[in-house]
Each structure stands twice: as C-alpha cells, then as structure tokens.
Image (cartoon, rainbow over all chains, first blue to last red; front, side):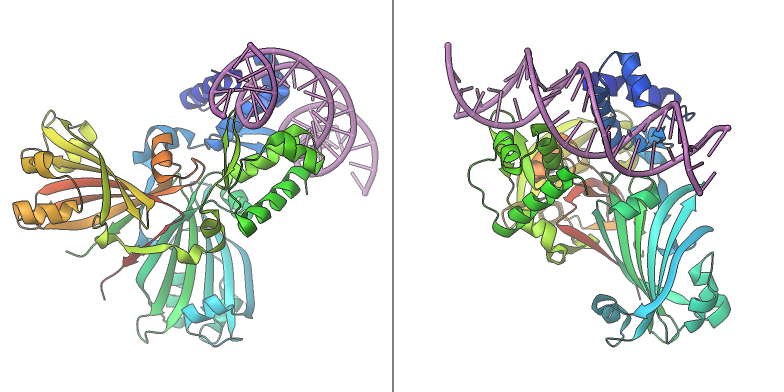
Length: 232
Length: 232
DNA sequence: CCTCATTTGTCCGTATGTATT
DNA sequence: CAATACATACGGACAAATGAG
C-alpha cells in the first residue's frame, strides 16, 4: 500500500475516533510528524478531502469537518425530511434578492410571458449552525410584489400566508443528484467532490391554482435523506 | 486561472467536440504538447477524471470515455422516472441470487426474527444498452420460496404477480445521494467520483399488508431525475 | 493601513516502482 | 527481455490568501 494511503488511513481513524475540532492542521507539521515530503502528505489529505472528512483553506490550514462520523459510520443518523416540509427552516440567511426579467426556463415554469419580471431569491438554510441547503426561489413580481420589498428572513411560505393570505400547495417535485458548482460547495461548506441532492418544485396558490413559487433546493448529500410518503 | 485548469478546459472542449476514441493519450506526449511539466499535466487530467470524462490505466494510457457528451451537454436528456414505476425494467441482468440469514437491519425492515432466512438478489438494469441502476432486493424466504428457485429475469414484481398472485404496494421511499463504491461504479460504468441516487423502499403485499420486498436501488445520477407526484 | 509570518496552491525537476504491451 | 506509460515519492521555488500585530 502506498505511503500516502497509509497516512490517510491513520488520519481518518483519528478523525473518526476523537473528532477533535480544535486548531486546524498544518501540512508542514503533519509531513514532519509522518516523516514524509509535504507533497506526499498533501496526497494523503486529498483522500480525506474526497471522503468529505476535512476541508482545506488557504492561509489557514486543514479543518476537520463536523459530522464526519455520522457520514462514514451511520447513515442512519442523517436528517430525514419530508419533501412537503421543506421551506420551513428557522435559520435562513438571504444572500440575494433581485427583480429581473424571467429566463425562458423559469418563465415557462411560472406561466409568465417572456420579459415579465420575477423576483429571484438566493438563500442558505442552516441546521445546528451548519449549512444545510442552498435555495433558489423565483416568484412572479406582478403577483407578490411585496416579497421584493419586505421579505427578509424566515419562512417564505409563512410570509406569504401572513402578508398576502396565500396558501401554497405543491403538486410534485423533481429529484436529482449532481456535484455542486464551486459557489454552492463554498456555501454548504463541502468539497466540490461531495454530491448534492437537488429538489425542484413548483408551488401553486391553492386558492387560484396559479404558480407562485418555483424553487430549486440543493441539499448537502451527506446530511439528508428525503422521505417520500405515498397516500394510503 | 492556473495552467492545469486551462489545459483541462482545452482537453474537455476537445473531448466534447470530437469524442475521438482512438488510441489512448499519453501524459508525456500531452505535457510536451502543452509545454508543461508532466505533473502539471497530471493535475489537469485529474480534473477530467473527476469529471468522468477520461479513465487512466497504468501501463496503457488515458482513455476517453464514451457518453461524455451526453453527460456534459444535455442534462435534459435524463430519464424521468416515477418512483412508483421502478422495478419494471425490461433488460435485467441478475448477478447473484442467494439464500442467507437476514442481517439485523434487513430483518427489521422485513419484520423477520434474527436468524430467519431471506433471499438476496443483486441485479443490474439497463436502458439502451447502458447500465442504468444496480438493485439489491431482499425477500423473506418463508413467504416466497419459489423466487429463490425460479426467478431468473425480467420484472420481479411481475414474477410475483404471475407466480404467487402477490400484488405489491409501496408506502414510501427514502431518497439519498452518495458516491458509489468501486463495485457499483464498475457495474454502472461510471467513475467513482460521479454520484448515484439511492432509493430505499419497502414493498408490502397489498392483500395481507406483510412486507415482502425490501429494495435498495442505486441509479446513475447523470441519467435519472425522479419525479414525485402528490395526490390532488 | 500596512507589514510580516504562516499556510495552502501551483509549478517545476528528478528518480524509482509497477503494470502493460 | 525491453520499451512504454502511469503511480509514487522526493526536492525546491514562488504565488496567493489569511490573520496577527
């Protein structure tokens, strides 16, 4: 077995055993400890990064990620989330809120004409202080203009109910998986080699049947198991 | 942009444009062509490997993988599949069919006692000659012993209906994503860096309500989008 | 605001081992 | 056996980001 893999095994065992999230590690210190060249140690750390156990940060060091134990040993401890319940997280950080022309794709989803304006919201939701999902939401500006002005935190669905008396209903969702782009990986604090679970869904005003929200959510794959329940 | 990424972009563009699957590439030839050190070129090829575009083989070279075009250019060509419809594929290759003691996990799912026997089936389902998913199915031997003896191909659900008069119903599914282990990656003909979508589900005999099949399916993430439809 | 030490990111060079043809 | 090609490991050098002061 190559040296770099032996080192990776040792480090992985240490992480899983103690999960000591203290000061970040240093390549120089580790390479000295194992008596190998820095490049060899980097190769070992590459394995851990691919395994989602650690994260590198230039100028700082190598961070041991929390939750690593859960990921490797007990997928049963993942979060379980009903699809119907998504969008109700308490801890929400809104990154961007803009009003622009709808793209063809989204216009079609929302039943808009080309050139109609839409509200685009990008948000990160966290659980236990850890990023959990990135959400891109699109709403027709003409129907809910007050969202652009006044929605700033918490549940969008709750806001729509309080402010506009709109109750949203969901017909279905499309679920897929992919590797995250660099921006999402950074927001979710995962390595770009770790997959995300994407849920696309269209929400209607239950009163009028009009599409009001098109939502694309990317969840950390290592923290989520979606539960789909059928009637009966 | 670092050199290795520029090179990766050039090579990726070439692959997507012509997909010339001829002789495998050589690191030495490529590094000479781009005028960089071999290690720098290796770093560029790492990107392509992570992207599922090429495969390395020691002593041979770097192979361009077929199907790369579909993966990168047209996510729209993914299959869309209702969860309820899974398990009905026509082209099924059964890899293993064994009768053993149920593990604790599976015994609990199927409502068996520890030590009860179960049938374990491992199969690969293909669409258009391309591997589509790997399926692990577990059934209580006491209830459907004829499966161990006579089920050899096609839809298990159809076989159960024809042979035992059992109609299966599904209550729900658990959906998650992960990187495949080496065996699954090989069966699905994808690189281990490409995520799979896993659907776990428990199927009951609609007549008696007894669990009859516990099924774990790993789909190629790049070929599947699951559609979940809600009643209404 | 700037400086400085620390730390990771990138690139080069060289050598040796191992698998394939 | 020999040639080719990837895999691993060592070394040095500089750039870029970060945080302390």
